Image (cartoon, rainbow, N blue to C red; front, side):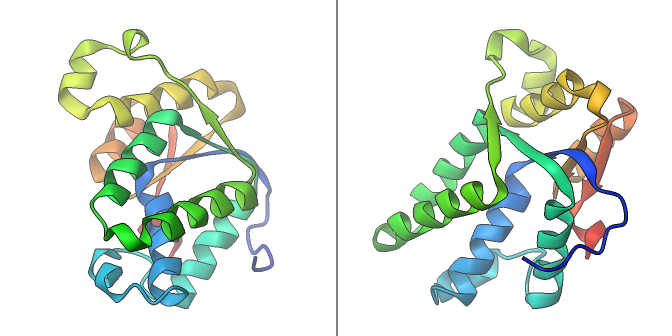
Length: 165
């Protein structure tokens, strides 16, 4: 990991699917040579934004995500070429270990049905995580503009991956 450039070490980062997928895609393309996945990269298209992302993530004492995010990652991997799926999962395991990622379950029945219908269970699970940990002033990291807006409206800390580039 790069040396930290963020002055204050923060307490809790909540990662949405997009940033995790971008980190995995970066390695898939630049380390594994999975050129077919290059077109899926949206934010971490070269070393500088990747390094800034890694640095940002490392500036938090703790990192967590929702079990729903892992399920969404599974849906994405299932759409990739079968021969590379195990390598992608190995990279996810390595990424989670390296970030000392925690996973938390947000039960569907604890989610507001109108929010689930409007935004989907993954986004609602991220919002619920942020609300659960509100006293720790968490920051949600996402590439989803709608989720950014919801978090801002709810007074939750949020950063779009482009904002740390």
